[in-house]
Length: 216
Image 1 (cartoon, helix red, strand yellow):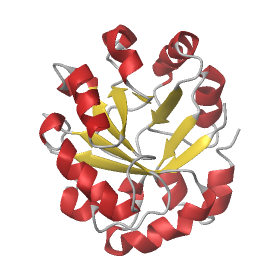
Image 2 (cartoon, rainbow, N blue to C red):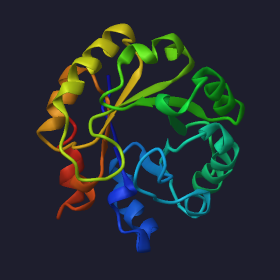
Image 3 (cartoon, rainbow, N blue to C red):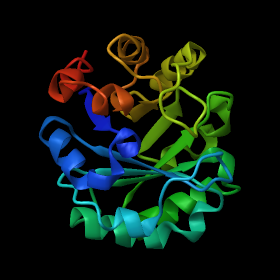
């Protein structure tokens, strides 16, 4: 499958965020936006007010690391519309660990004209999402414990990527956490095709070179 690069703006300079996005957009396929509530994960980032002020020509993947995501789907859908100008090519990613009924949340995301995606943490077994897998258009397998950028890649997630690719040959499988020019080779060899990278891209002296090094 084609490799899709999604720079994570968690590692960008928030004071000039739209300039930061503009610096990578010509060279990537998506923009990854991490939303943290300080409850599901220990860190806090930003909310819909920040998202709607973004200027993204590329599709957005808004990753909701928050409790009760179903209560904020409509608000984030509106924010994505303002930031990107459309919604149908964007994703809202929820966490299995925060949803009692992920199928219902997937349907709610679709109702608002956005593609649903689901994520699991490194310690969460793959079987927890198998019953609802057909409801989602992308699965994000976290390769770090979510909450902070700059963490080391957890290689024990690789067998889950292999297993998921066997189960769903045409599914977009996303990885996020500790991605660089070395770990991306492991992830892609296992079956991942959507690559999220934050500090590796935004802290690089040559961002284009960093992005291209992820296309393995």
